[in-house]
Image (cartoon, rainbow, N blue to C red; front, side, top):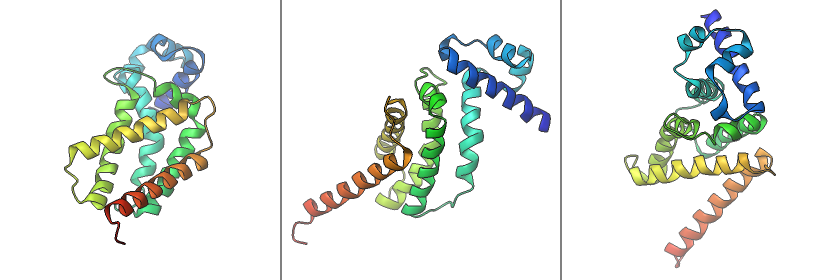
Length: 186
């Protein structure tokens, strides 16, 4: 198992380096393997394709962190977790801004969407009481993926603390305004 992780980490490091130099769609498996001195057979033993490798990088770094959090966290615990995820993305924004631009069936944005959907489903059940509302789930999932992509790809990417503070402020002000509009007598 240790050797497997060493190999995967070497392939991941090679891909990260290559993505700094050339566009993802121009990177070949042979380039990744050549960068870390491995053969294609080693790559395909661990990964289906280069998209799978990008997703593994994310899964290894983020999903493990998320799995170690409470299964039913309160709003501020969720915001702390979101802050940590945003800190990670910001520290690795060069890689993720490129990864989020990858298009296609196995794209990172699709993988990211699939990963955050169950988290948002739990939160929606807490907020609206209906975790089976596909429209609401897709709306909030797409909005989350898009705003993170937009944030990370902005040339003047704001610090994560500012980004999260803006999201909290917009959410709070929006909820207060909607509540006032629907309950004018209060």
